[in-house]
Image (cartoon, rainbow, N blue to C red):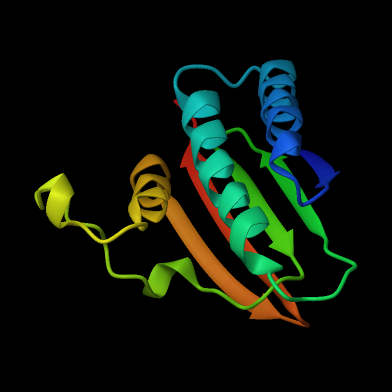
Amino acid sequence: MATHRLSIEPDVAEIQRLLDWVESCCGDAGVGGDVPFKLSLALDEAVVNVINYAFADLPPPHRIEVELAIEPDRVTAVIIDNGRAFDPLVVAPADPNIPLADRKLGGLGIHLVRTMMDRVDYQRADGENRLRLEKARG
């Protein structure tokens, strides 16, 4: 199993560096198909939410780390931040059948993460949020 770790600043300018890192790690490990794309899309959505909402009105230091574990049968990413507690899994699933004009703002990113990943888990421990995203290989 290959394990990788990346620390990023809470700035949307860091997203491209995160996506390049995911692509590189997956490429080096021979992860193919749509797995790198779906993982990158889910990480993009989740980390942008952390950047935009987790640290509002909280004093620094603000920390975001992403752990990536590449196993023969799956790829797992864990987003760790020291922002406000927020469990995205308690948010009601978005209803894609509601007309756009009638929808509440937000919530589609969480829907996208749930849709792209095979498993999503959340845990709050020791002042940290830990969002675990898992995608099967092949």
